[in-house]
Image 1 (cartoon, helix red, strand yellow):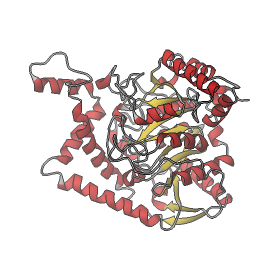
Image 2: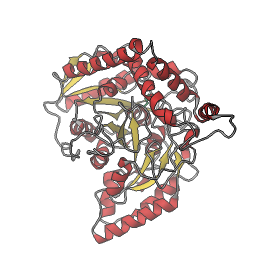
Image 3: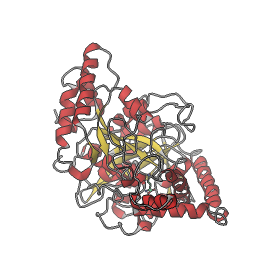
Image 4: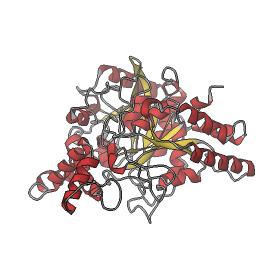
Length: 485
Ligand code: GLN
């Protein structure tokens, strides 16, 4: 058998049920692997909390009251608030902050029996594509420590890839689950907007923010997603009134008859040759498995960059106004009056990229510019959703790359915000339309993983997971381990 830390959620759950291992053994193993905080993936670990949860799981496994994922460890992106661990959202603003409650997603995974290993590094307030915007230092990519893990859920992706946890939560506003999953060679899914409750997720852009699982395989993601989703009407007014599903239910179905849409806009100039080759080969594999391909068009793909980088900062500038030093978080020590306290608190607490977005957001919402920027962006957002609607009249799932390149070097784009924004081109459209989408490992180039994106119609998560699982049954990219893991 492979070592414990290389096993997935489904395998660990099975071993725990048959008592071949105990929850305490499993937790101890992962805690030991995280000693010294490899890759700077974790922001908070508390082995006493974790081991107490693991002991409780062992008791439930013994008395027959175990949940479906009892004793399987998970770690959370640091934008999910947690009672038992600090929550910083990667910001100095929230250094040492402790929430009086658990986010709904955290609570639901606990109810399913999962044991919390800790909190994972991320870009500050989930703003970024490289994890270099964390106030607590960048995360390194387990495949090549000189490279970024992607972002903003960089800690989540690196921790899974490095065998520091079998699964993690992430959040995706414009690509933050899919792109780090692609860069670190793991699997991640962002469900339809509203599937998972946003209650207790530190808000970035509320009309886009969604939670989702990150793990090695589609099978593991399906297990976590089934536990995470479901209505939360009293606490998140945008949570969909759709019952939780068993997202594993279609996994075993073969792909015969599947219609894959290929949008030429996802295969244009900016796409690196090595990524193109991997995706082309993966598409050939999907055809071998019985799928057919059809050309579709998503003509506003390029516009998704300016549209997203107007709407997301606009919402962020409103959401982040709560960090003013009054109720919680950082407060500047020296100030002459209230206004001075606000200004100093925010100047000290927020990093550069967060300040840039707040200013952009305030600008596009301001009198005289609102119509020219914000309103136009909202109109084009609607058109982007219409384009997908047309495309899904012809196909069941749209397949393309997650990102134009593989993971870049730490520092390479650190001083160039626009270069970072441009790299989000393939993940933003589905986010703006609120569609479910995922990233699965589909190749390697020069030792670095390449991710393939699957986009589905609303509420078609089970379908995406089926396509991903069938692909993974016939390929082994998702089983590849970074050296030394
Ligand atoms: N890279 C995008 C941004 O910086 C997406 C981040 C996210 O999905 N949270 O906003």
